[in-house]
Amino acid sequence: MKNNELQNSGRIMLITGATSGFGEAIAHLAASSGYHLVICGRREGRLNELSESLGACVLMSLVFDVCDERATRNALLELADTMVPHVLINNAGLAVGTGSIDVGVYDDWNRMIDTNIKGLLHVTRELTPRMQAGSRVINMGSVAGKQAYPGGAVYNATKFAVDGLTKAMRMDLLPRGIQVAQVAPGAANTEFSLVRFKGDKQKAKNVYTGFEPLSAVDVAEAVMFIADRPPHVSIQDILIMPAAQASVHHLLRKNS
Ligand code: NDP
Ligand code: 8X3
Image 1 (tube, rainbow, N blue to C red):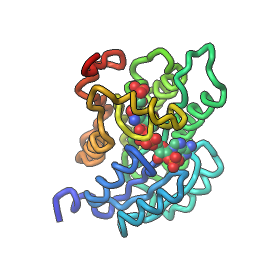
Image 2: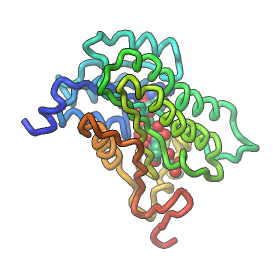
Image 3: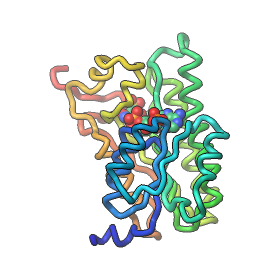
Image 4: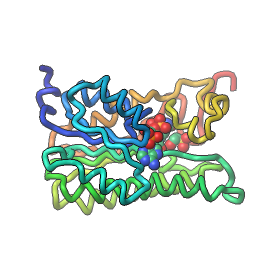
């Protein structure tokens, strides 16, 4: 058994948005470093496939929509006390659309606000009362929560909210010995852009042409670095960018 497998043996990680992208990559890395997992998402088929590929380290798959307060509560109440996570990864999230604020689509705005802010709150509210001292919450922020950009207003607002929530949650949970961190990635090639462009594959592909974006594994490694620090070390925030991206406004594409 490797050192981190020994250290994490018996520890439980719950991951929202485990059906693709960062969440799925985190699940694979966490499983290989000894965690037991509770994996969550709306797409049951994807969760089943992940569960099959990870085997016995998956304690439970929970199918629910984080936007739905009651469904979130009911799903998380299925966790016995012995399955309450030591590490909660609030990763589920999305961007929908790139329109300017004056032509914004209410349904897109609601989906982003309900998922990225309210969804994170629902999961946190249900689980943190049951989490023990020494546990960690890791929220998936974004460079879009540090810097605004045209066409990103509501997505920016939701990720600025994650940034603010992370800071305030850290203060609230300090007396209980629960650490709170954020990982804030730049451009990463997952299903994110496909969702943002509502299934338009070409538009999604164009986001990542001419430079090497982050992979899901790059981001998962940053998450695991936080999760696996010794108990006296608290990483508060990691901003992780592709080498070609100096800021949300400075992206060096070849032939551009
Ligand atoms: P993906 O689209 O690949 O993954 C998103 C995940 O979120 C899926 O597993 C999806 O599962 C889950 N999800 C979305 N909506 C809901 C919902 N209502 N209820 C439950 N689960 C939901 O994208 P990423 O992996 O890239 O995104 C993960 C997080 O990272 C998001 O919060 C995103 O904002 C953030 N991020 C992404 C960046 C990027 O460039 N890719 C950069 C910075 C941050 P399912 O559909 O099965 O429910
Ligand atoms: C995703 C990164 O720059 O597309 O959060 O908003 S960006």
